[in-house]
Image 1 (tube, one colour):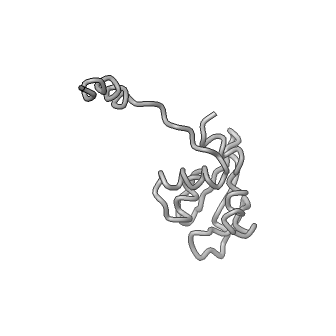
Image 2 (cartoon, rainbow, N blue to C red; image 1 turned 120 degrees about the vertical axis):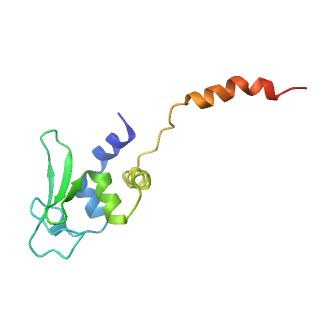
Image 3 (cartoon, rainbow, N blue to C red; image 1 turned 90 degrees about the vertical axis):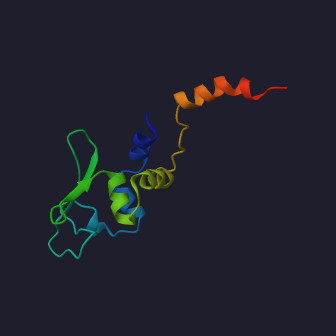
Length: 115
């Protein structure tokens, strides 16, 4: 299971929104959009056919998953939104696999350690 998948399991979208301090009126299937002054309940928070949590504002014409919500809500880059989501969910980031550039440097290391 990937870090992001585990975080989404531990902190689904409605729980994330509540953890960010949004009132419940923003977390339903017909809700007020937290991104604009909404009086018509143009925001939806729902589970799709795969059981994944999604959101969409029909006025702003934006929507996606928990990470995209956090990215828009806190005005973060995608990478920072991922890090923040993992932290909020209490998921430790695993180390990325070693890339070919690192392996190449490791092979060259003996050349640099001359007596």
